[in-house]
Length: 386
Image 1 (cartoon, rainbow, N blue to C red):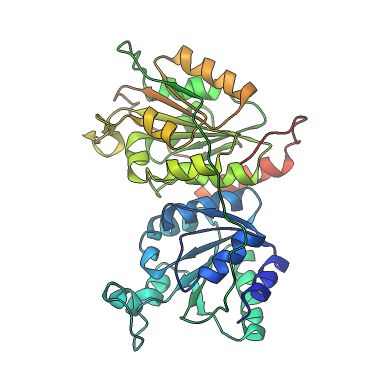
Image 2: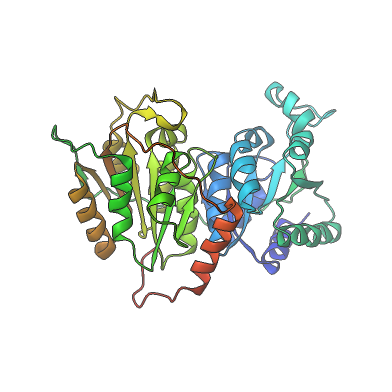
């Protein structure tokens, strides 16, 4: 099938934002996406799903591309982000290890169970036809499912796409400009107080994304607002969700509130964030060295220098803040100067008893945020993107 013609059909249907991880079966479609559309190369397939989901919230019809082995990595966001938040994605997943087709041994089992996994996850799917006219009709059917807020995946067999040369190499080198390490004098505030300080700086151009667990629940208690999103499940994906939203909504200030257990789970996302470098995103890590919402077990963050890691990944600023006053000052400065920024604050393990949970369902929170984005006036000044 002529890859470019299929890509043009996707663009006609409004699919212009792509994220994924390479696969030899999909290389031509990936090359087309890089050449002709907005493409974000993710560190792993779960991150790609979260990036595309953030772009969808920001108003982009989004596509994810992956090998079927990577479908296993994407299970967490597909089942605990896309499903409860009603975030529909169009997916193309290769069928490595197809029964009867010689392939590498690591693909044997996945080749047998790929479509079963999609069925179990309640994801609609079809084998993508190699005939362009039939594939065009399949895209129309898939688009109808997306309009109903249901994800739809095409399973792609070997030899489906004609060769599409890569014409545009993505090169993006961003050097850290400010790197400030910590000293011994830590205020160690509670998470609740840290979230209150963050929330006090927001304005009508701010969107706050809180990671799963007590972070989202405490932010909800502090102030339930239309420009908040409280992550549930999909642990580790909040930074990637923020990246997709920041790239799709450059006029908004995206505040990503993360935890040490969450960030450690998908730390490769820092490299992706640094590479695509949205100037309108600040990434705040509240580190209590613990999985507090599940019993207080220690994480392995004690020896990790997050400041150096974020700086080496290309965050413009990577700053260890020691107090709520420093946190507020850094956020106020970022509001003016922008630039992809990483803020690190050590917090205590204390949290409120009997925390409330959002009274709205996750998809209602998402839809409220989409209305906020759609109805908000644009800023008078332009904000730089990637």
